[in-house]
Image (cartoon, rainbow, N blue to C red; front, side, top):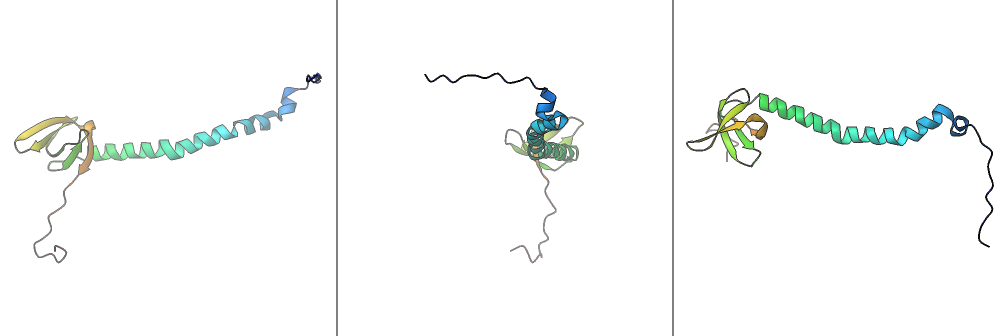
Length: 119
């Protein structure tokens, strides 16, 4: 009663039916767009941040104030190839792998006493 008759269709060439190469390209166009969007919104900024972080770590010098990955803040007392010595309290030096330094807070020159901005 509710069944509808099924009619067989004639077999057609699949390349001609889909439009050939143009049809295949248009079916992959959304995937290409999503990949490009992910590259420009996620991967590229992450790579840029990683390069900046590596450059900062390579430029560490004595008396720089650094923040470690566990949140400790200390002053660099010695720099080696892969490690730095960080003073986290007076007289307490800790050897740290450079990769665990998350932020470098380099202190600038102190302002002169007669500076008009120092209020």
